[in-house]
Image 1 (cartoon, helix red, strand yellow):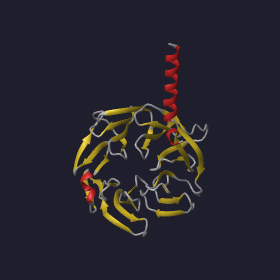
Image 2 (cartoon, helix red, strand yellow):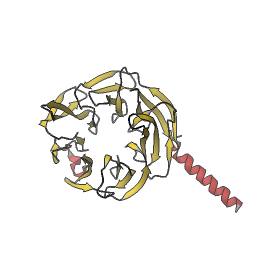
Image 3 (tube, rainbow, N blue to C red):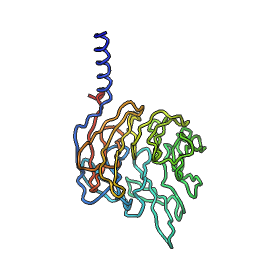
Length: 305
């Protein structure tokens, strides 16, 4: 019995170590200003970020530390996205006229700096989601719009979009509403990089992962603004708390996508860390502080040692 208990203990220790995320280094981005909602480019070499109210969009090269402004327009930093190559960025800009918001969907080539308007003067438009085939999807007055010329991978196109508080699955050219927990308010919905799972949050109930049929696979409790790791094996999120007016504390956590493991990777005491994002190559995790500073952690899993 003693040998069995010892063996079981060693197995559990081994499993825990295999799931551990190790923080190798923490780096503060050398950027002047107050910024938020940073995310990496698909090549993991640049980070893109905006302001707390989503006005403007900037690029920061990690190696050269060069900062370049992509846009100075209102709304440009809200849920921007890239094409598969990372050479093009897509975003929505907003203008107000007589108390009404009008939006423009923009495509910008990051190699040539050429910008083109996909569609303008839109009412109630969502930011675009870019398919692997190169087409862009967005809603206008709850009607799905498609733009762009699809390449040969169009038959494999799949995406998750938000329409108000609904999750909409686009697959094989058709849309369906995904309701893993029934008629709820769903936020922060995203498709895993392997295109097999959906990550989402229901306010007051927690954060969950389902398959693309809506079957719940894992539950994470209180886990806000969750994002996928590039290999779909982990998620990163914040646990933020407030006094009803301002955020009083927040740390960045990672968890296995199957819900079997959770770890606080900042645990910094009085610093408030918000809105994390994982690089596609899995080597870095971004976040901003409540003071508008942007940091990135160099990380590895125990398996990578």
